[in-house]
Image (tube, rainbow, N blue to C red; front, side, top):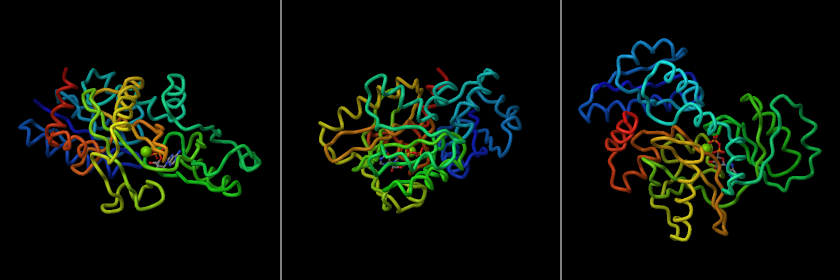
Length: 301
Ligand SMILES: Nc1ncnc2c1ncn2[C@@H]1O[C@H](COP(=O)(O)OP(=O)(O)O)[C@@H](O)[C@H]1O
Ligand SMILES: [Mg+2]
């Protein structure tokens, strides 16, 4: 059995992808399977011949074309089996606005929001008196908390929107949900134990996400079953609604009244030894190698 590990890529999350790729390669070797390392930097095309030698492609990419369905579409066109969600659900999950519209239509909880078109200019926004501050401003389609800001008053709004616009595409202005940061990994259609993230900054920014020691992770989260049960159930419903395959991670904010709101669905969450899905899987009794094996087996089905 030959497993191609597709990693690196050209998104802003390239370095994280290389970490996921290295961890997955190590696990594949431990499992006694043959690894075909497939790092690429600019063009996916460059590694297609390598990928074609494998029985299955393990997508260890994050962000950009690896997570928005672009890579999945090419693999489909080449008739290859691959891990993770298909092109359509990847594209849907990468688009926060479309995801939230779908959640709303299905009575699933998400914070209220509005969209600002990517190319619109400044003045419109500060004149908007309709927000109750704070709000969160973020690019609609980036994935690693780049360009995300908590805005406390109208006079700061334009600047934040401009920063978010620099990442390209539309900008979302979302109601700020005070409280706690919660995430639920899904593996093989089962919700893993709930994780609470305690970032050392006021929100879970890039630094807290990727610097060791900048966040505390608690799994299982210290929450009553009156919260973990519905949040697990709803995570599953959300993953199904988006059409996620094999594994994914659903992120939430939980307010002091124990109401939770989905922020986004990650179709290619990190898979290093210290990433969240493996952490939750460990709590459920699954080693990192077992997680990787489960995902590969699902992709081969
Ligand atoms: N509505 C919100 N209320 C409170 N915090 C938020 C809200 N939206 C985002 N955040 C904070 O910003 C982080 C990144 O936002 P997120 O929507 O997950 O974007 P990204 O795709 O960049 O990860 C979240 O993990 C959370 O800490
Ligand atoms: Mg996020």
